[in-house]
Length: 143
Image 1 (spheres, rainbow, N blue to C red):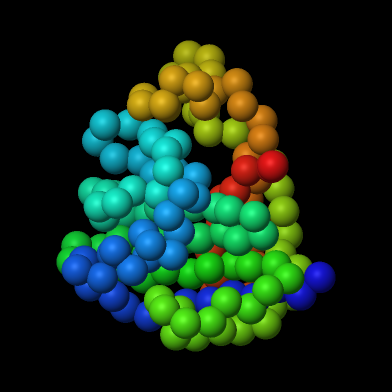
Image 2 (cartoon, rainbow, N blue to C red):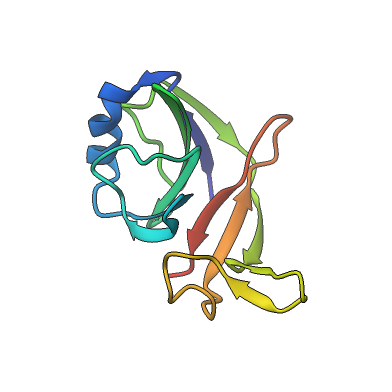
């Protein structure tokens, strides 16, 4: 299978609707002061630093910093073109590892993140890491 990594370059807050339109209906996750979210792609830019979203054979990672955001899209089997993607690179198959959205409390007991109450017992999430010099993890869910 062929893998591609796509980038948006720096975008402004006013351009969020372009990304939301691209990923409308995708499942997304992020954390903010209200806790952990596992919801459809938000229509408004959330107050967070990172957001992950996924769909069939596509994984999105967004970095949000003040008035700006940058997105990267990892896709398998297809090469996305057009807005908001301005850069594309063919990459080797990423490494994949299963993950859980929970943490250990000071008493070493598993604690659920605040927010989404159904996340603790789920074991269908995974992390993909493209094999590059500078990269970051993408998060998704097994179908």
